[in-house]
Amino acid sequence: MDYEVKLDIFEGPLDLLLYLIKKNELDIYNIPIALITKQYLEYIDILKTLNLDLAGEYLVLAATLVHIKSKLLLPETAEEGEEEADPRHELVEQLLEYQAFKNASQSLLEREVLERDVFIRGAAPVEAPPGDDDDRHAWQEIGLFELVDAFRQVLGNLEQPELMAIDLDRTSLADRINEIMDQLQGCQSLTFTELLNGSRERRLIIYTLLALLELVKQRMIRICQAGTFGVIRLFLAVEEDHG
Amino acid sequence: MDETKAVIEGLIFASESPLTIDKIVEIFLDRNLTRQDVTAHLHELMNEYESRCGGFYLQEVAGGFQFRTRPELSAWIAKLKGTRPAALTAAALETLAIIAYRQPVVRAEVERLRGVDVSRPLRTLLERKLVRMVGRKDVPGKPMIYGTTRKFLEVFSLKDLSELPTMGELKDLTK
Image 1 (cartoon, chains in turn blue, red):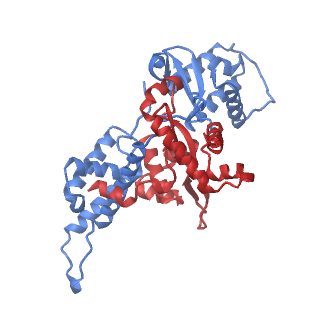
Image 2 (tube, chains in turn brown, cyan):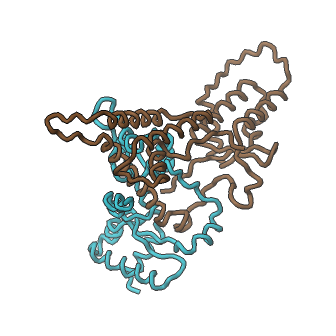
């Protein structure tokens, strides 16, 4: 039920390159550029045919690889006996550094992580959607389509002709966002119906949809649904800071 | 038990965040307690909890001292706490590691090291208060400078940043 297409298999072009080097059991200090460039470009092609939104950085590295390859192909200009630097050098340095930070992030996870391995006294439980274990079946995070569907239902229930309603009360989108956040701060979670509070005003309903979309995009809230066609409920996504 | 030690134990118990030695010295102001005295008491307490091997222990973390449950008991405590915060994504962790090692650091540098845009993971880290803006760099565009927070130390059980493995050690892991 996930509508988001993720390219998180690789955390970026350097990660893809490291993966290829490991997969081929290559020596990072002596990368066969022709081979690796070929494979790298093949991956890029696959990602493209999957119609994924390919980050520009992948192409930059592709260009770098091709550039290095072309340099290696050129006959060495043995002028003045000056030793040409290995064109791969800079890339190798970058890869090693990246690998070190990757190790660093792994070593963080190996530590005793608060709220995972160790707990402090009486810290308030993080109010999150009951998404784990038993409740997993009850609440599912929903995609954009379900949300839009819910709104279409509400709009569809409105009586049609509301002739010439000129409303002077112009709430802005930012206002609506703040209102929703205020409501949520008060009670941690809201059902969709509570949020609209029986309003029949088309404008308010549409602003609510836009506000929700923005809040989800900013990862300020999470929207879950109790099973297919079930009740939709909003949760604050941000962990309260007790420090 | 020595009264001073008992007071210190009580202070740590009642404190919401890791209690610093400075704070303890401040509270004992009229008793002229030195930092050495406090440290000695703290170490005694730490040893006592260690040898007792009970449900929790005293840990030095984020420049202070805090009671924490034993890692071996995590599965039990988790039942009490219910849901826990979602784990950080690999992207967020890498970004966090780079900021931790290179701080104070601008975003462009983090992106150069990761080789990819970091706006999303960076936002997550700011939201979770693991990273904060520490100022602006005095170069054209005045980019934000980022650093890790005290909460970062608390979450990853670090006394201070020097407890992180050095870059040299991390590079050796690769070989």
